[in-house]
Length: 309
Image 1 (cartoon, helix red, strand yellow):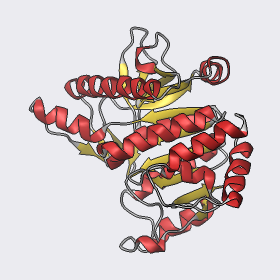
Image 2 (cartoon, helix red, strand yellow):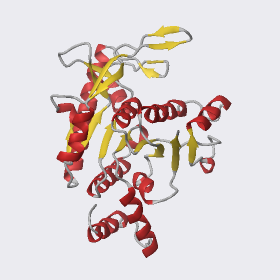
Image 3 (cartoon, one colour):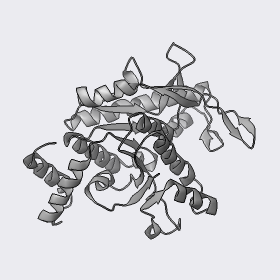
Image 4 (cartoon, helix red, strand yellow):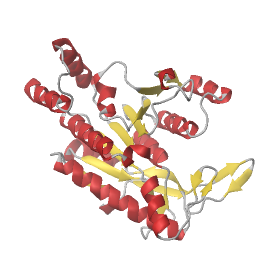
């Protein structure tokens, strides 16, 4: 944990874009205490519309760099759905969804790997420019995630999603070594090596699923899903109806009642997967809000929904 002087200058840097905002000594002390309790590791998933807003992405990366400097081990997992859609359109391909997931044929997979690789390298470069060590794992000889083809069953029948994977193994030891010994931030794209082959073939992976698997493998203190929604809302049309804390059982009741519906269901299910795999808590937060990630660590309450078992 850095000393109080370094923390002071960090705190000033983070709040610099918001002049005239008073910071009381008590608030400063409380922030230090909360940060000191966070020993991680923490898995942050960046995706959705949050990646479409340059200011939000910049704030997220600055937050990741700050937390890393303060001694919290962090892994950044990312998707790239909208850039992939644009690249497919440029190639004359029409995205196809099956059971709410991207159908991935050979042509689509080639674009997925190219786009995610470009994003992966860019995020690592930007983190390094912020003064922290980060690695784009797309270029590592031993990629940390392995998968088999996803066997999805719907209404009792198999659903063909093409070259979409279900994570079956992960290099937990390698990730932990990077976090502890190398003191770096691993940046992981949402793809995985196809475990049936030894020649580096890829499978497309849902980004939330990838983040859940990493969080479980590392027994993460928190799995934080930065997305394009404030969290779980009791009334989907009213942001003020945000539910700050839920148990898994309460979430399942809300799903059955139709309160959690549509695109929120897979986000919540990704939280279930992270908890089942060993993460202590899972959080859905609005990645469109600058520095929402830091809010999770600095305040008792924050815009978002925390889900625990």
